Length: 448
Picture: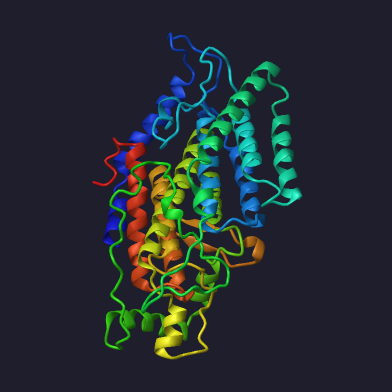
C-alpha cells in the first residue's frame, strides 16, 4: 500500500515535463522542417469533442458486445486510444518507436495541411470497424460506427475537400497499421487453447460450467515491452485449513464482513461489479472520458490520456492473469462452503470464473490511476456517472488513487477477494503503470 501511495504522490516534475512537451508538440506541429510555418493548426488548438463522441459510442459498444471477456475489453481500449493519439501527428510526443513489435507508422506530409479532428474521426471509425464484427456486435451498433463517422465528417464541410481527404486518409492508414499490429499479440491464439485446472488442496475450483477466463492471457505480447518488469506479486498466504492460520483468518474476515454489509458497502460492490455492464476497462474508459470533459482538455492532451490509460489497462490484464494461473488460489465461496462449513453461503456478487489471487480489479484500477494521475495530477473532486443509466447512486472521489482503492476494496465487500489479494493487486498494478509511464517518458523521474 505504501508503494502505491508513494508512486502517486510525487507528480510535479513529471507534469512540468509533460506540459513542456505538449507545448513543444503544439509549436513544432505548426512548423515545417525547414523552419517555415505550415498551414496545419496544432492539435492543442482543437477541442476534444471528437474524442468524447467516440469514447461515448465505444462505452456503449462494450456494453453490448458479446463473446469478449471482461478484461479483454482492454485490448480495443488500448489500441483505439493509440489510433487517436498517433493520428493527430503528435510529433515529438509520438510513441511509435516504443510500441513493442510495431514497425514504422505512416507519416504525414510536413508541407501540407491536415485537420486533426478529421484524422481522429476517420482513424477511430476504421479501427472499430476492423475490430468489431457481426460475430460480437449487433447490426445497430455496427451501423452506429458508420453513422457517427459520417455525422462528425459533416462538421468539416466548410474545409477544403483535398485537405479533408488527406486527413481522412492519414487517420485510416494509422488505424489499419495499428489493427494489423494488434492481431500479432497472440490474444486470439492464446484464447483458443484448452485449459484444465490443476486439482489439489487450496487450488481454485471453477465456479461456472463455462471455460475458465483468460488462462493464457499472461502469454500475450505486451504493448510496452518492459511493462511487466518487477511486477511479480510474490506467493499468496500459504494455504491452511487450521482455524488459527493466517489463511483461515483472511477468509473468515471476509465471511464475517459479508454478514453485516452496510448500504454503502453493498453500493460499492454493485458499482464496481462491471459485468454485466460496460466492462471494467469500459468503466475506466468512461472515467477517462468524464475527466477529459471536466478538465476541458484539448485534443492533444485528451488523446494522450486516452492512449496511456488504455495501455496501462491492457498491460495490467496481462500481468494479473499471468499470476492468477501461476498460483491458482481458491476462491472464498469454495473455502467457506467446504472448510468453514456454511454450505449455503454465497457472495454478494457473482464470483468470476478464474482464480482468486491477485485481485484483478485492484491491479487494473491502480494501473489506470497511475496513467490518469500522470496526465492530470490531482483534479480534486470527481463524481463517477458511469452507472447513471442503471439508476445506481454516483460515487465521488478526491483523487484517482481513491478510485482505485474503492474499486479494489469493492471486491472484498462483494465477497470474491480476500483483502491481502487486493492490497497486493494495488501494488502490482502501480508497478505496471509506473513501468509504462517511465518507459514512455523516461525523463519523468516518476518513481523517485
